[in-house]
Amino acid sequence: MSASAASSTAVSVEAGHSLWQDAWARLRKNRLALISAFVVTLLGLVCAAAPWLARFSYEEQDLALGAAPPSAKHWLGTDQLGRDQFTRLLYGGRVSLMVGLCATAVSLTIGVLYGAIAGFLGGKVDALLMRVVDILYALPFTLFVILLTVWLGRELWLLFAAIGAVEWLTMARIVRGQVASLKRMEFVEAAHALGLRKRRIILRHMIPNVLGPVIVYTTLTVPAVMLLEAFLSFLGLGVQPPMSSWGSMIKTGADHMEEYWWMLVFPAGVFSTTLFCLNFLGDGLRDALDVRASKD
Image (cartoon, rainbow, N blue to C red; front, side):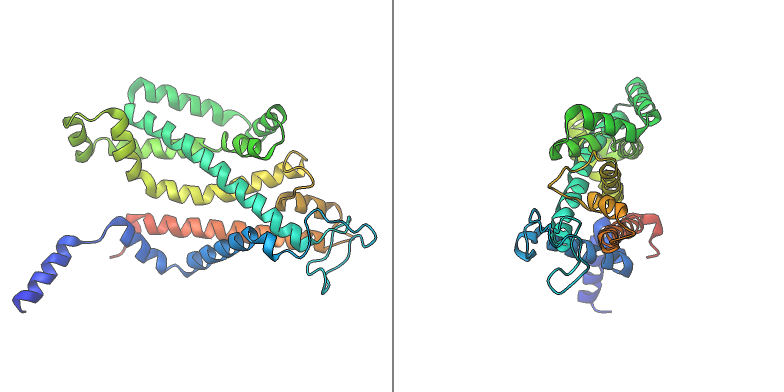
């Protein structure tokens, strides 16, 4: 072996691969996760482009037409008020995906900060904060969300806050466990030796090192939040007319499924496909970010 070849080999060995490079390499081998990511991205882009793709206004009614089956004019049919189902499906997707992402962002922010503080401080503070989590776990989440929705109102941003406020508990436990194990690492002891403040250590050193599990759980939280919004829509506490979500469309379709099958089949099909893809993507990310799963 020549000196230049040996030198390049030594450099590559020293450089190694980061966790994210290894994770991406493993994720690329998971075709189901990649296809799921593509489908979710495509659905998001199509729903975002609803004002340009929709041929009708989502409020436009044709009472004389009523509920009509799929046709060349109305690709997915119309509902009982003569509104185009394809248009409402696009606009409903914007609401459902927005609820999933925004409510998850709320729960992510609360859970990560709460868990990081509990895990880093430890001792009595950790015990107290985790007992609060245990007490909240004992409460019926759905009833709590319903009470928050009734108390705060039924505006869309309040729905984000209400759902996000009850979905952070598991995230807090995950982050707390990760931080509790990381705080004994050498790089954290070095940060203490340098005299860094606790807030800086948590924000700059602890939280970035728990992003792997956080990202995985986030992809699994989004479908759970969307499912909760759909359940609230079934109870009439979700998105209010004339706005629609996939959950409210499924509720309307379920009420008329014996007469107008298309009002249920298409929203439920798109909603189920999105949930499946998000779960497959979450499983793929979990396997990719699990260093113990690597065979390299």
